[in-house]
Length: 301
Image 1: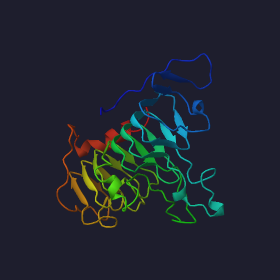
Image 2: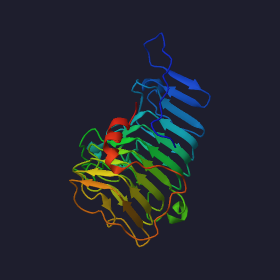
Image 3: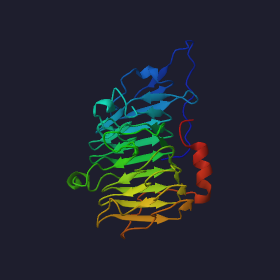
Image 4: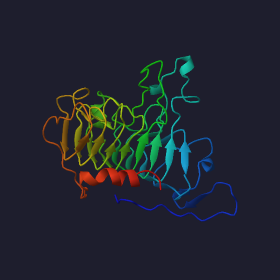
């Protein structure tokens, strides 16, 4: 997948009302309200692109269940942030029982999230589960707008856990051989506590990404039977950049290469042997260039 793609400059409407312009199987969006109060379930063979300079956003929840060949680009996707109408913490509700900002599940495959800003999921920001496969997430930011609490479950940590790949250690029969994800030039920032991402079973390639979520618990989480290659990333002021002890098993593998650790503490150790080699051509920039590139170019443009 390419880098620094340029979103469309949408035609101007004579009305001041929000506009969306449909092109075959695609939707070029210029605002949030065009989509109404019901966020979409995105089917196969779709492209949704936010028009450059319009701050297009989707609020609530976006789902992809079994979807194939989808591009989501240049959008802000903002979840319910563990609040009504999704979660009622005043009456015992827990963030983990709410909606992700984006859910990818049930063998969804060949998806590309590019230059998005995904935030405030009640459960996760972008979770990838149930044998979904061949997914690229590039130049995308992940954050939470507040240091929310989760009083009936994780307390002050607020279940601010951004990206889960593989939902359960007991789902090997479905997930083994799937959950292959590439993350590059992404930025995990404000108020993210964990899962940047946390991976089970899949082969995940994480490179040229930026981590600045100070006050966190960990960044990359090595889960059961994960195989993770991470390299040329930048970690600034965070704890446990590579958490390979808490969630892993004897089959878990992580190999970290040429990362920059600035003002960090805690775990960075590799685990296991036999890390995979990505089956595609790519060009990684030097870690010394990553922070300025990601700060300047990640998210919608």
